[in-house]
Length: 66
Image 1 (cartoon, one colour):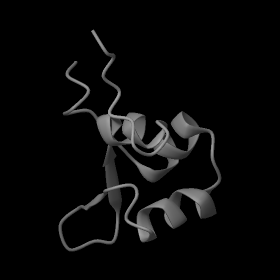
Image 2 (cartoon, one colour):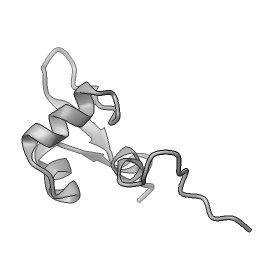
Image 3 (tube, rainbow, N blue to C red):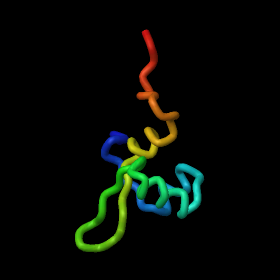
């Protein structure tokens, strides 16, 4: 599956990153981790690609030098 299109719930994202709910919500509030809401609900969904990017130190794009 394309990781850009793989969506996770908050609980799945917490397990994937191995962080607490408070840490995950802090990352979203600080705009370091983009999320999307589902319809008119407050349910949030996060893309696996964005979670992977959040694991990299700031300033790194994940690309290797040739």
